[in-house]
Image 1 (cartoon, rainbow, N blue to C red):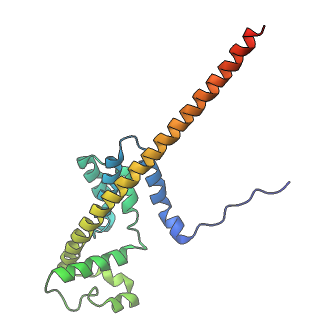
Image 2: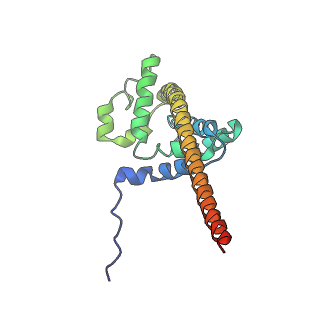
Image 3: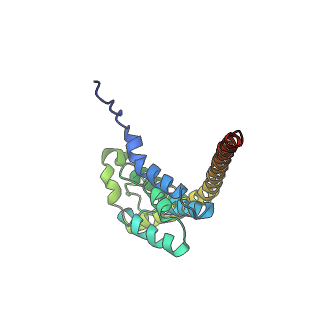
Length: 193
């Protein structure tokens, strides 16, 4: 008797994105429609960029409830903002914010990315002006990301729903054909007796 095969270990990226994949599968199976799913993904895509670290989940749940979109899809999107991705997201927020706003502290760790390579936790020691600059960058990146994501996700959700309808119609046709063939043999057999 052979031992059952063990599944190979997931890569770091695969295990990091596993909750995202699970929540997306749950959201796609929802019966509320493509706009509900796409709205949830877009909402999560917007809040993903915000530098509010531990408050993402409660803020997204409240916002999803207020605008009536998929909470599961929104949570799936903000799961991309995890400890592995938060520093690059914040740096992008800051770069866009600096491009849009003048001034700021020249000694800020965000204005000198080489310092972040030496001490990644320096990103948590920023001033109020740098934080507001990051928020402006987050608003711009979040708006761009969520707008594009809404249309892509809506198209994807409609394609998934259409594929599900086709599979269901094919299955119903097969069951109907099998039932008519079964009843046809039965009636043919009873007439010969």
